[in-house]
Image (cartoon, rainbow, N blue to C red; front, side):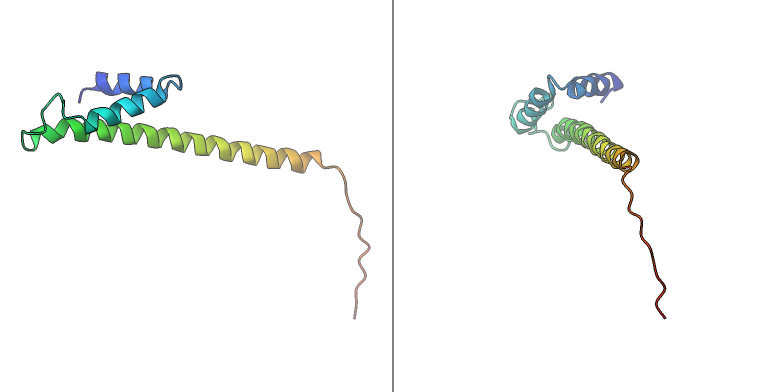
Amino acid sequence: MSNSFTDWYRKLIRNSKYRWLIILGTLFYLLSPIDLLPDIIPIVGQIDDVLILTVLVSEVSQILIERIRAVKSKDTDAVADQSTASTDSVDVNAVQVD
């Protein structure tokens, strides 16, 4: 597939307004008997399906990875904020036992 298609698809799927519509449309296209290259033609018929599925999986996985990283960075920021925000301290008088 050309770069222009993958760029267009990437921009569209990253827009949260259209994300689910594009994912469902892609799945419908993959399951539909109507294709750019008919599946009746051996090997060539499956090429467009494989390429579109590859682009879909790579984009969705990239979105999920970015979301996981964002959640982890929020968690580490929250922990850092809690550790710097807590000014309560406990004094302990330790005694050595022989």
